[in-house]
Image (tube, rainbow, N blue to C red; front, side, top):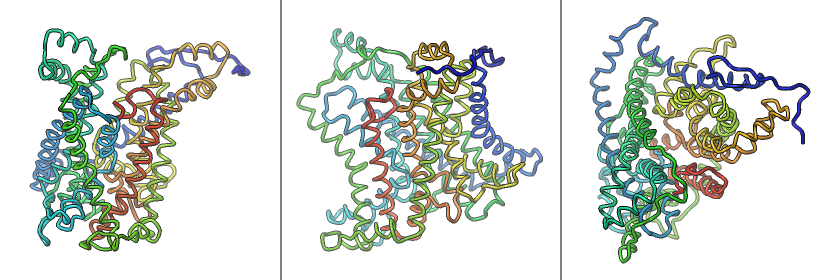
Length: 581
């Protein structure tokens, strides 16, 4: 079919945009991108910075300094650095070891191992914390039958500093593994073959060649785990808050829930501390990753070069044991809590009941509303971002080459910074009625939706940008010669090609938004509860069985979406699905 419009499209240079040649009817896309960058990136963070430095409209560094220097803030800052730093070291060791073992050896079922390893990362931190608490407690459905559970009446051994660090390390280890797998994709096989020809052993190849070449990826992966630990709310909230071991995110949450908007300026100052710590780690990690990016033909890439021989079975047993401890036993224990009628009742065929699932999925208004809210907000955000990702990826790839790094950094800022920082920024931005229209979205579902759009635009765009880089420009040139307008070009040429990658990005957004807690914990109000908020509230009120039923149900949704994405893998750009090594 012809794409010719009634008039011929005129081309003109856009001043200030690298002299790019842009159809006149394509200006709207550039304006929309600029609005998104300003609305999602600059405005919330600018409002946060203004409130922190000028709490009463007057520039005052003394107020900021006094808040940051308080004993509670200093202790919470130390706890944040302590848990994030030590857990990042544990995640680095565990994630790098797991990634290298799968990449260089001949272990079997690599795809299943990688899938389950990454699955634990996709599940919400509060679900992971709840699962480990269930497994390690005195009433553990897993440890009690084995006689290994703590004595009845004793505190759960995971409460406090050590438990927080341990669970964080296990939860964030896949971040390191994904970063290492990304680096291994760009290592040429010839380097390994040359070393083997010279007589190098496997240990020598790994220690003298692979690890030095992957140094940037390893440090970047460790920094990713560190930044994730700085902003993690779910794990410190469930493991640290009960024993008053507070990090900066949990301190901010406790202050806001106790005193309300009256302490917003003080919390803005603490949020800026969180943003500063996480921002430094993010920038250094991004610089290291940029230096390691390269291009290697798929035929020349490194392949497994270390056959294990008689050691293959023991190594496979070790890997599956790790996954059993990291995923299997905690979720099995969580399922046991959801299936037994009351805490402490032995689990058996005579005591198994689905009453808890019926309670949270059918009977309780608050939990059914939370499922509905989480599903609708995650699906709505994913759908909107799917369309925006196609439009913005085309603009970034074809129209604003020189400004692309700056625009991408502004788009990624709300995602890279901890969720508590974005939540405080959104409260400050929308606490008062919006100018011109006089309506406030604070306390409504729309403030959470806005936060989701701002936070998850970056991950929605990553697979689309990867796919956009593979589109040959001659398709667009042919359409232009046929007289296509900008929007006809987008509708008939670009969008159909990018749709599979955009759909995958949307599903990835749905995965993380569906169980999200860090942002919604500070933004929810009566009627806008999300799954993360309800699960946390159920645990706080002692309804462990109901909380377990919510966690298992939510995790089942995540597993189903991941399996659906895995089925789409052959139609997606390489590297979109992090568990596909």
